[in-house]
Length: 407
Image (cartoon, rainbow, N blue to C red; front, side, top):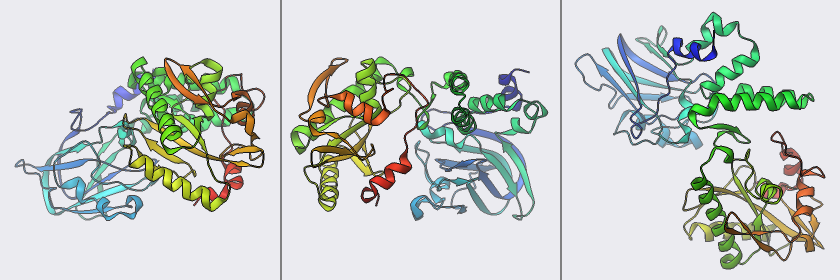
């Protein structure tokens, strides 16, 4: 049996929200007081709205009680009430933490004869997180009746009999890429790079209908599948941000990491990359001063139309006015060397980096290091000119070397 046929027979559904006019609509015939909405993997559950109708057509979910497995950032606004009250808007009415099998329970306060359930998902790129949804109903919180299982295909004998690689590929078709990512990582670590690369290519074929791909940060849209217009927006956003930091904030900032690698090696963004990176060199040398300056940079950019937050990885996440996300890393001068998080602590000679130069890429001016090759060798080793979509950075070592940035 073909993999796609398994999904068709199990009636797997891709559902989104009000803006896409693609809610999950279930016609049911069940008596229940409690409805449980859960995911079947390690993920965060964030739906926009849930409407539950009795046989008279009344939305009995309004003003119901809600219980959640957790709340994102322990924020009480994610207690579930936002998912049962108000109108759908395409965002998220509640949001759990990332955990195993997160859930939301709606208590309708009494038994109802139910006729329809409508689930409005998020409309943005994160809609895929809810696709492992399973919905069950109960009158007493002990005996549960399954109403919907979007992973029902995994219960079929045809799926069970598949080889593990084919299971991973089929899961890709349901936008669950963690199994195939783990297998690719395992193959690569065991020295089977070509097999890992082949599996990555097969996985991306399964994702083509969704215009998505497997990138360094998970399910995303790598530059290889973005339109020229989308890539030009990214070039413009990066160029503008570099100009702002260099000319207005007054510290040298330049394209770095995978962004620099693509520009120097291929004259464009890496096809298998999915984000943009830049680094700035602090005007200070002492740790407290570097941290204070980074806070000042954050405030400056937020006041300049950008949205900047401190990432868990000790760098800044910057969303530009064009809604392009750019990672901002911090560097500084130690004696005659420039040291840059998260690269090896030895750094590069200051003259390899500064003064920066401006190069034109795809019609846009970008700041880059004076001698980019030295920085690329520090980052990727002497084989930096050889493409490697499976290359992984050693973040554990970076945390040890730059521990003061992690707070």
